[in-house]
Length: 121
Ligand SMILES: [Zn+2]
Image (cartoon, rainbow, N blue to C red; front, top):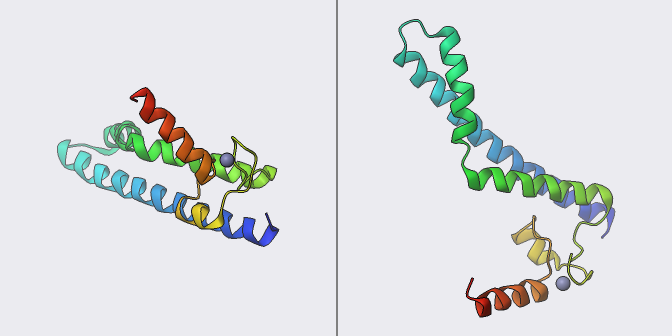
């Protein structure tokens, strides 16, 4: 992939990551407010509770997506981004724009899904 295109996708992925982390931060702020009203003398306790809740409250799906985005950014760095992990062919840019964390071209993805369906997964 052209370096300019890689930069484009890097930006796309980083924006998405910031978006998710921003959401998580909002959750954290909400929790601070809640904890503070729950305890009469909240300062230390609230900090402790908030950190624990913060980790618990990042939804599982978001955690997985964060991991996928970080992996995609690593692929940009090592030059394997946009290459299908199954057949080694280029993944169409249209597909990457729609789903920048994808690691498979549409043909391999369809094949995999067909296989999963036939296995009854
Ligand atoms: Zn493929």
